[in-house]
Length: 388
Image (cartoon, helix red, strand yellow):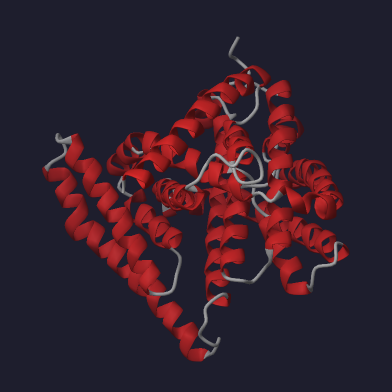
């Protein structure tokens, strides 16, 4: 027991020490800290110095960060807000998603992947990074401008698409044969989760919040209990933990005072676990695959950082947005997403894709993070760009 504890503690020590050192450099160069966490994973993981002996345990802990992240994303997905925003941005979002899927599919096909694997690669290209987009958007623009409203609307619609992709991948990776009964079980599971989430939230959780709203510690515990209860319930219906957490968050979204409070108080916890999640991605990033995949990664990354801004610029301009604002939206949305990494993780775990395709998705995501962060911080106002 002592050896395991020492391994975990020493791993966490190295992760946060390395991340703080490289993070300082990232702040000066205006890069996303997510890149730092993955780079630290590469350096001290088995491909590098092989110092993180408990990378699998760290990976499991890091997945808690994704569960909390999706819970928080759900908190912002008020159905009424989504419907209002969808009227402005749904067409542009869906058309762009189709364009990016086709590009990813074609590049993956040219790289030698079969159609199913190429489709997963293509679908993973649909999304823009919620974390990068929101962290690089000043709060005054985020909350009081059309650019912030349109960006959030696009990201929310993409979140819904991502959840649908995760459901399909989870079903495709099930050991049970895909038939009417198995599909029916998934549908029944989804309906059951939705029913329990919204009824439980209305009859149990919100009344408890209102009764004990002055005890912040209790509210914190209650929110996490609700998040992980729905997450575990989804797992029992052969859906992913992340889907259950997302639905748990959505069930709170229409209760503004509760959702806003939870969104603020859970951010530090989310950030802690996300450090470990992105570190685990770096640990698993098998650089031995780079010689055979670097051409596809370069081609796909270049197309994403070029085509995404162009596509969003013209689609938003056609929908009535002024050209400068349309350009800014396009450039800010011009990267692949952390959801793409999650899609690759679940697809690989479900044996829908192999390690090489997952490497292509992760490599493209990391490359677009770097280029997009560089472009945004040098062209537009950002919280990072205003430092120093």
